[in-house]
Amino acid sequence: MNLNRVGNWAADDYNAKKKRIGIFLEENTEYINKINLQILPIILQRTIQNFINEYPKLKKKGLSGPTDNLEWAESMMTWGNILTHRCNLIK
Image (tube, rainbow, N blue to C red; front, side):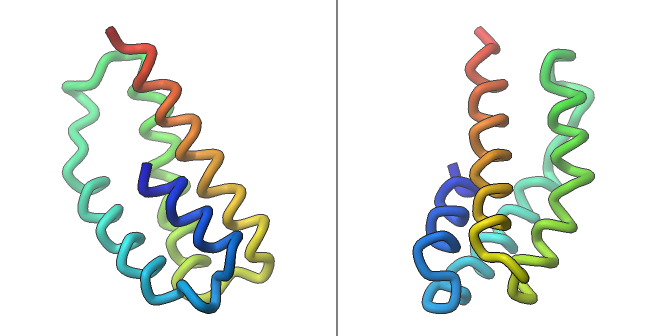
């Protein structure tokens, strides 16, 4: 959910919402650092690991100011959608 929210803010007006985006990126880092892949279902482990590997690059771009705000926003929203969809597969 936070990834989609951040992506929407960046797409709407990155410069006006840069401070809020930074706060959420830092909060997301805290959440990510608490993830224990071992307790997750196998169906999620690879996806989450891929996200964990990709997130530092996304965060760095988000904090420094992406070269292309819309492309960065799309990446954030794509990951948000992927993770939401994957979690919905667990029942």
